[in-house]
Every structure is written in structure tokens, then in C-alpha cells.
Image 1 (cartoon, rainbow, N blue to C red):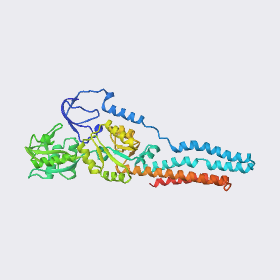
Image 2 (image 1 turned 90 degrees about the vertical axis):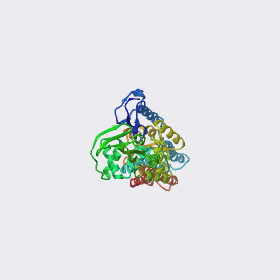
Image 3 (image 1 turned 135 degrees about the vertical axis):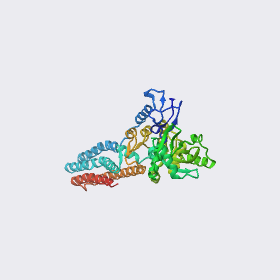
Image 4 (image 1 turned 90 degrees about the horizontal axis):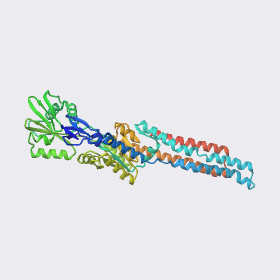
Length: 463
């Protein structure tokens, strides 16, 4: 709890909110927040074992403990199939001679039958495809922690995305520049704002400075620069006091006209953070910033939709920003979620069908662990990467759809391999019992099936 001072706190590692929140005396502070500006005195209200990060780690442990290991069908099938095949081969070798048939002929057929029934190709059919699928994914920056996760990815019905750092770049950028004063221009407005913000490390300041650099706007010299934490930054530029402030604080220094107020309200309704540039007592204009969606986010969501997979955004950011980004990308959204809320949403989705969670922050770790399969962005936090079952190293949203496609191709390859292995065995079992094929064809069929499933699995390397 803040006992003295005011500042802006970056809570994105905990809540996912992309823009620092202004805090003052009496406001709560999450453990793990980063102080952007201003000096604070805080009173600790929770022990280390009960702070926000510790509770998140506890949620991760609980979610991981609730996962049941995937029982592999082939292993179970082989455990039953092998003794039955052995008993059947022994019966073929012994029973007909006991009924008066030739011992040599039926022992020979029994041995051939035992070779045919050997489940080598069947047992190899799954791991060969999995190994090829994992290698094919690794070649394009799709890392999956084992075959069980690779299989589950292709079966998911819903993919839940975090927003900040996952669907968006995690760094605000200037989206709009509005000019209110007749003697100002977008370039002059940006130049004044950049000059005032030149000494600040605030994300909004970095966004304005980046835009000024990209547009080739030179920085004017300033003096008497100072920050009013959580409210504004001011400096003297060319002999005049210039203020870059929140709309609420700017209203204390300059009056906005009705049209300007409507324009600011429209920007804020679009999930953008707005600052007003004030010179003296005149509002020159407004600059809005927003953590914009990644360049491939819309295409990535569309690719999942074509695969029949539903997408939903689970974000700790404010509802207005979340809905604006979700509307632009064309997916459902649930906003203002704390880590335990994301966990509850994943549990509800998972109860209906397999679900994947894609995230990058500490606050995403419990949901990543609880989902049927967790996918971390490669540039995410260590907590997310350690907890997730897979990672997309190139930070492309479209790679999530690529993972689903790769998994489905691997599952299809496994089914083909099983069909090859069982189909060859069924044919040669019948021909061996009937005496049409002997020991050497049985050897060739057994080895051939192993070669075929291996060669078929290697096709995945071209994915």
C-alpha cells in the first residue's frame, strides 16, 4: 500500500495491462510491479509467501498437479496384443500336429506366424511419426516438449490468447495525432511532445520519441523538465512552458473545446491512451498511443478459424482496450482478469473440449499449466516458457495455426502407419496359416512394414 508519493506503475507482468497505471497514497501495489517514475514509500501488507508472485506460482503447481498423464493407446494395445499373438502362434505350431497333422509343416508355419505377428512396426509407428513431427517443428521455430503435447495440439477446439505481448507487441505506439490549435501542425505537435518527454523512460514517452525519430522530427532543447507522477511531464521549450498531460490533468491548465473533447472520448473508446499537449494555457492537440496488434495477428486468427478452431482473448487489461483489440482481430474477449480468473476461464473451456492457452507473462503461467496444452511466445518470461508445453520462438501468432496443422499432420501420419503395420500383418497372417507364404516372406513382410512406417514418418520432415 502506498503511504507517500505518487507514480505510474507498470503492472504488465502481473495483470497484462499494457500502459502503466497512475498510483497515489492509499492505492494498492502488486508485488512484481515496476515503478516507472516518481519516488514511493510503500507499506508491505502481505508476507513473501502470500504476495502476488507467490500465489501465481502456487496456482501453477496446482494446475500442473491436476494434469493426468496421457496413456498411449499403442502401448496399451501392444501389451495385450503381444501375448495373444505369441499364444496364437504356439497354438498353430502345436494343435494341428496333436490332431494328426505333420509336425514339421506346422512348426514352420507357427514360426512364420510369430515373425509376422511381431509388433515391431506397430510399436515404431507412433514414435517415428512423433520424432519427425518434432524435428519438422523445430526447423521453423516451433518447439514442443514431447509427443504427448504434439498430439494434444491437433485436438484442441479452442485457443485462448493473452493480449499484451502475445496478440500485441507489448510496446505502445503512437496511433493518432490530433491538432486543435490553428497555428499548430502534426509535426510541430509531435516535436514539442518529444522534446518534453526526451528525459523520460515512461512507455508513452518512448512511443512518442520513437514516432518522432521515425518521422525525422528534431528534438528541441529544453530546460526545467520535471515529472508530475501519474499526471504529466512539463518543460520549458523555446521560452514557453509545455505540458504533456493526461486529459484529466490537462483540463486544469487549458480548456478543451466540445469538438476536441469528443475526439478525445472517441480515441479513448477505441482503447487508446491519450495525452494532451498544452503550451502556456492553450491546448495544441492530442496524441494517442496503443499497444497495437502484431502484424500477423489477424491472419493468425483467420488461419485458426479456417482449421475449425475458435479463438478467444483472455486479458488482464481494461475492458475498453481489450474489446477494441478483439474487435479489430475478430475474436471474443474477456477482460480485466487476474491470474486466478484466467485459470477459472481455462477450466470452464477445458470442461467442454480440449483447449490451448497462448501467453507470455508471469500472470499467464497458471493458465498455461491448466490448459490441455500451453503455448508460450518465445520472447515471453521464463515462468511462461518453463510452464508451457510448447513455444513459438519467432513470436508469430500465425505459428499457433502452424502448430495445429503440424500436429494434425502427425496424427494423420500415425494413423497411416498403424494401418500399414496392421494391414500387412493381417494379410500375411491369413496367407501364412493357409500355407501360401512361408518363413522368408514373413521375414520380409515384418522388416518391410518397419521400413514402410519409418519412410512414411520421414515425410513429415517436408512439412
